[in-house]
Amino acid sequence: MDLSEVLISEDEIKDMVKRVASEIDRDYEGEELVVIGVLTGAFIFVSDLVREMKTHSVIDFMQVSSYAGTVSTGEINIKKDISTDIRGKNVIVVEDIIDTGNTLKALKAKLLERGPKSLKICTAFDKPSRRVNDLVPDYNGITIPDEFIVGYGLDYDGAFRDFKEIRIVR
Ligand code: IMP
Ligand code: MG
Image (cartoon, rainbow, N blue to C red; front, side, top):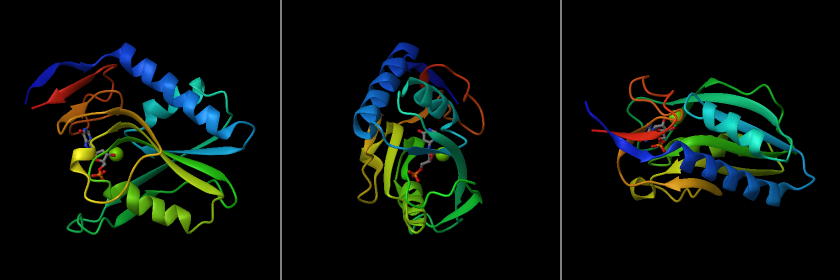
C-alpha cells in the first residue's frame, strides 16, 4: 500500500469548510438546525463546520453499516442512533464522502420517516463518477476523481484519519 503526495492541502480544506459554512448560513438564517454527523469519518468535518457556521445547531451523531451482501439494495443497519427528536426540525446530515450514494440514500429515507421539517445532505468530498443512484448532495465540499482517499477523518482500515491533508491510497 502506497500513499500519494498531497492531493488536497490543509489550506484548501479550510477554504472549503468556510465556503460550505457560508452556504449553510445563507440558507438557514434565523432557523433552528440539527446537524447529524455520520460516524466515524465525519467527526472532523462536523467539528470544523459547526464552528465556522454562524447558524447555531444541535449536534448529534449516527453510525450505520451496510448489510453484508446487500450493497446493491443499499440497506443499512443503524449501529448508533441519534438521541435528538428531529420531528419538525431542519436537519442536515453531514458525511465525510459520498461514493456509490447507497449509505446516504438509505439513511435519508430512514430519517425522513421521522418527520423532519427539512432534510439536506452535506458532504466534505464527493465521487460522483461512482454513483449508482440519483443522490446529489445539497452542499458539496470538494469533488474528487475515482480514487480511494484518506485523511481529514477518512480512513483506510482505521488508519490515517488524523492526517490534516488528503492523500490517495494505491
Ligand atoms: P457509499 O455508500 O458507497 O456512498 O459509501 C460511503 C462510505 O464509504 C463513506 O462514508 C466512507 O466511509 C466510505 N468511503 C467511500 N469512499 C472512500 C474513500 O475514498 N476513502 C475513505 N472512505 C471511503
Ligand atoms: Mg463513512
